[in-house]
Image (cartoon, rainbow, N blue to C red):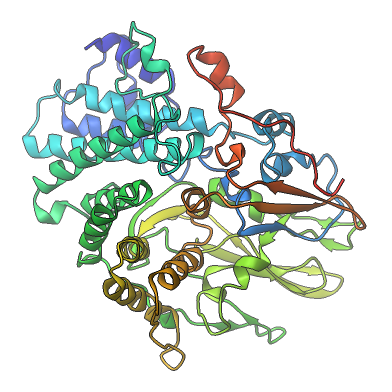
Length: 528
């Protein structure tokens, strides 16, 4: 192993992190971690998708059918709509447009490889440190779990769906932190090869966790764990349509006594004393406050900034505070029956401008705070995500295991077990007086219900775009309101090439071995 090259490669990407002085030896090029504690710190600083790091998924939630544009409002000075419309309208040069619009860190490709580099450095050093087998296994399990998780996301963003084109180009597999002499590792591997590596990493993590004491296989410490790995194995096999293994690993998570389904009847509703309007009490899953949370990760703003980005000062043109440019789609809202408790506990609702009219927003299930402003002498409450200690943007949670299990069972024709899992989950989402167990007359009816249930239960958690991809990549339309009297409608066609995100130009320029995805011409409005 080329230790000096390894650490130099890692240090190029180091910023001020939790590792502190650990990353400041006298001679960085000769630095070698001495024990598992040092490696654990390196993992936290360079390999975890912490809640203070952005750039992993800031625009993916604008591309699916759970979102639509809000009514037109005069933009703030200097606002460039390409900040949003580049991805919302599936433009082939979306990264270039977003960069021109000053959209911040949108290069997800780069971000994921940064944390993969951190995991690789830890894996490379495992054989060099002196420590107990138990302490080394703790680090080893985390590093492989994280690398598998990151490659899963990368290949599903920049590669075609596994069940559609497994031998198409995926992403490069960088498995060492060394600066390798051969450039072959820079070339894109097939989707099938990347999935094989994901399974290898996750199974290595699984085996390593199983060698540890049971009480150390999971704890509420923001680290990866055995149930986190099992849920990711279930998800990976589900995407591969290996239904038996998807059900097997989902069931292991369902049986884990560390977690239980959240009963939404225990999430109370409150009333605003100033105007009597009923307001919502929103549940936050990406924290250990929820009994469902297996592993929280990611930054709140990174996941939702573009869907809750209010203009915080009164706008003279509109006569009041501006609202976000996106809201939950009518199609999504219409999938909920009126007495489904999730509608008013999962999806944030806020007033539309100064009118007080309520809109369902395109975010929820995170830490929510409210702020009251006075506009046109009307008191209005706005509910927005907010950061706090121990609060993250996303989580792996128990509900997905039930849904993965139900879908896998449905696909192999096991209607009994699929129905049982669905009813166990849904019972916690309705008032006991409103709950009626579901029954299904056919496999087709069951599969359709499972897909709708995933949409309701997992909305705005990063699943919908990936689910649409593996369910046949259906056509989607988005309408952007250009003015008070005009709008432009764009269509993502069935099996459209833009169901696979383009590789950013920066990555192509930095790596001559990369090949761009097949891209259509500039996407024009269909109503022109």
